Picture 1 (tube, helix red, strand yellow):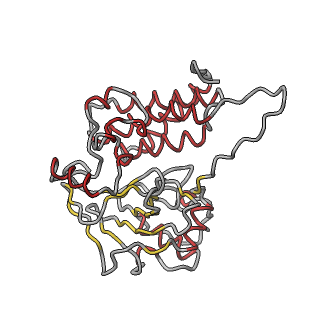
Picture 2: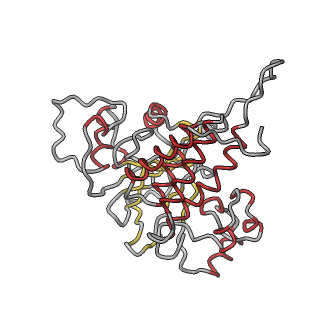
Picture 3: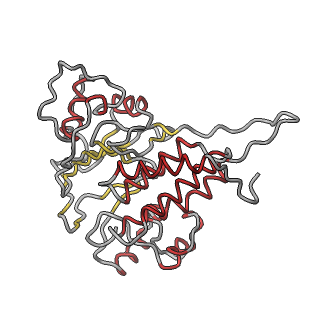
Length: 324
């Protein structure tokens, strides 16, 4: 983590100006930390080398490789949405009194009450970490690694568990306890320091709300005379460097060209989706998550940019040279 921040250390100068897949980044082979959580490692020698070069660095965990599912409960001052957006997919009757509801702590408690389950925010069997902003990280281990869960933001109209409750899982990271930023320290609560297995009812809720990442089916033999479909993997390879440039804007609040980078990434995604190289819904989810990571307090504006650029791009299908 960048010293005093909850965002990854910035990329090296070469990687800032050269778009490439994080998996192909030469910096990783040289022991550098480019591309955020894509550089995550358990190599103690490498970690010690990093800290010798930047002793003030913080620590974060890449959730996917660690099989973690972390509920990030926010307590931000924000306008409470209509009741039909508090718990996606659950209709809250008008007779339910929602006065006083103000944060993710309330919506998570409401979800647990609806399912007649214990409130995860009060789960003393697992690692819980108080954040400097007054939020809470509730750590769980995914005991079934064959099932992968996607990250999400609690304000997303597409994939969300509850309002102001983010999910940190595959494709995301979580700040480790005791890490200190300019806002304060991430402080573990209680006595438990290990994540417990993800409760079955939460697993079911994540599945219900679209958090399960479906495995890409292996294509069968192509019938004779049928046109070959474009490869989504190739389209994804083109989009990922653009998404990475959006995520890198988290390293600075201004002067990064965030809007232009997000617009370019979404327009390209729309063009690739229009040509059959991408699944547009999945691309939108990735773009939304990247935008939220870089600018967490302007989610609605980012989604407006994404939807407009996706639509514009889809109207002009993009067929890159060399892809068939």
